[in-house]
Each structure stands twice: as C-alpha cells, then as structure tokens.
Length: 117
Image (cartoon, rainbow, N blue to C red; front, side):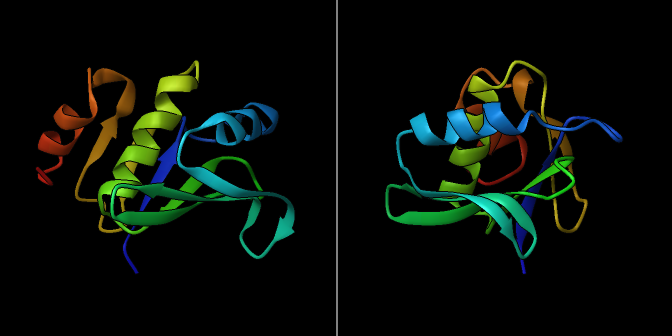
C-alpha cells in the first residue's frame, strides 16, 4: 500500500486538538471522526479534484498517515502544513524522500520536488 507519513520529529507529538480543528475547517475534508479506531485516534476523508484520500492521526500522535500518493494526498499534506504552526516532515512508504513541507511556497513546488508534477 502506498501512503505518505507526516511527522514533526523523533518522539514529538502532534497537538490532537489542533489537528481536529484544522481537519474540521479544511475545505475538502469530511467525515471527521474522533475515537480509538484501528490505527487512528482521528480520521477524516479528503477530496481534491477527482481524487480522494483518508487522513489518520495515529494513536501515539507522533505521525499522520495519508493513504495513497495522488493529488488529494499531496494537497491534504500541504494544507495540514499551511495551518500547523510547526514544520512537518513528509516521507513516503519507500523512504525515497524526506521533505519539510513548510519549505514549499506552494502545492506545485511540492509536487515538483518529489517528482509528481
């Protein structure tokens, strides 16, 4: 399964309440759920153009998994960073890159950096 994994740094936790606020306000996000799900404490669907993904804050709050690697997944990661006050790292399942999302001025530059333009 292909996915993106977001993290702040080793053993650094995301602010669960802030992630919840961001997801509830994010255009394209829906079905935002809070609880103890398999592999998540917060889960949301996200639609962008003709693509969709699932965003999951892991129970340890150290990572956010975004299913798939398409347009919706990239846009979800970019939008999370645009609202989160700390730099967020993003890696893929193959560990072929580790980028800091806050270093990109726009969605298009992020896509070019990881070779999905």
